[in-house]
Image: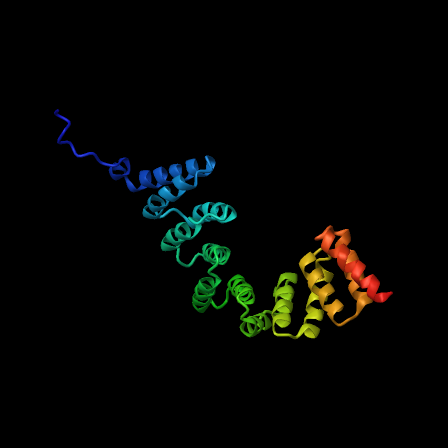
Length: 236
């Protein structure tokens, strides 16, 4: 009976800031090790209160996004409340929004981030990718045109080609796809786009050559085999 009027406090309320941080990290680690989504989402407010660093939030966020968890977005929003300018968290948040069917929100977020950090190449590429996926091709092409020199990776060329194809300019896309493939010979998505353009032209000999490469790389082998048969029949 003597205990009846004693106020029960949560364990974290009695802790010093350093101990709170350790406690939040332990809950987080335990949840990840046990692969327990609910426990990780419960740990998130404590992680935010303890202001755990972005790399810790990122690891949990990557895990939730890889599981296609609906909790990924609220979890990442709590992480961003602690580190609003962390690029990796912003990119992952945009990816999660795209995965969960709201890429337009991702576009808005990346536009806002790019306004604050115009020098960020990764943010520019993420925005361009989201714009291609939301069929906003002219804006994507404009962004990708601003990426020059060594910054032009095969992925940049591939998305540039996708934007041009989306604007019904496949002829211009060919050079970008060829360059992407030259640098990364097993870039199957670029090969598939190139084969399709050749087939539509029609440049059947070139299309057959690219489809044969895809077959060797085991890319959608049944579909590729059917396309090859179709081309062979058309070529007699």
